[in-house]
Length: 106
Image (cartoon, rainbow, N blue to C red; front, side, top):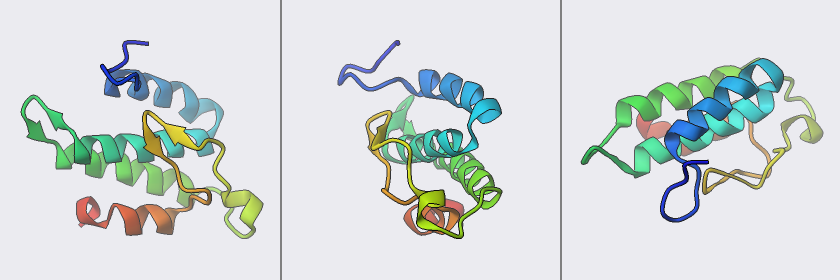
């Protein structure tokens, strides 16, 4: 891990993690994409906020979650409490991502 000074995984590490997860576990990949969207929205990258990249990752999370079943609570239950220093909601589905990242999804 090439973690940040606060012990969180770097955005680079999270992107690599996403690449592994997207072929193995769509829910985990969606959680990682959600975390990346928040990180790009809330942290400076080269001295600026990258809302464009936050939108890309939020959209990926929405697309992955839209493709998963969401009829029962156990189908939307998150598999992790936190990813890359970002708290993951207990129940994560596409509408949660749309609401919490609405500012970058416009």
